[in-house]
Length: 333
Image (cartoon, one colour):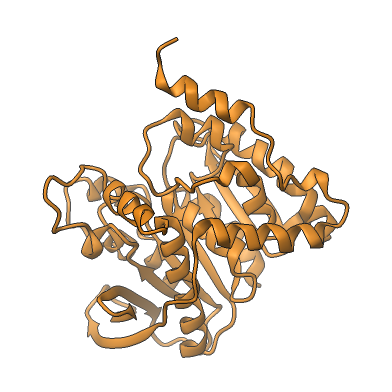
């Protein structure tokens, strides 16, 4: 038995999370303790701000408007967003903050093709900000750390993975990449609500962006009113530990305290919509269902069971806009 993965699996199989919901009679007390521990493990500090430093209108397809904004989160820390809206509309349904997974960048959300594989992504429905704008939302395309315009560019002998270098370098500084991403999402969400005077803000993303949305909604119970994600949910021991690591999901000591069901449960009673492909090679539907069944305990206690929805997609690890949008729109009547 020489395989190093067996060491990891042995630890996982013999660990008993300290904050299992089943161990608590009072689920509200459990929420407080779990959210506090999650923030601690993600290494989130209130050290960021959100300030607009540049904006410019850019042409986009007929019937839509595009505003490119560069934001400052801290000194030497900038990020681009694209705000897409439908022209000649009196009232917007809400704000949808759109994010891409481990793809070439956020430009996919606004329908741009910059890399050869982008054609395949767009054919599968990656232009989620365009979709949101067409449906009457203020759609915001956000570039996550490590991708597109924010990709790693100045390291010698950089790894081929988009996030492994920045993840490990942050760990040496006592930070996590997921935590830094969540911190930005939370600060940006608050800024968007204030700027557009619209309190109904949801997060939307697939794969690793779905993970970021889940974690952000679990942390921020005030500004984030719901999430719609896909290809990102399953017990850690049966998903992430079974494949190569990107560093993005690797939170020190997390499994000592809880698994993914806790993060989903912390979103309750707000809407949490998840689509999972039947043939998804990372997060298949049957593994997503395992997490949902555990998290449902808390949604039931909050009398919000109908706000936790898992949709089965017929294919693999991909976008399912035709399944997810009709479900989202039920919450915006």
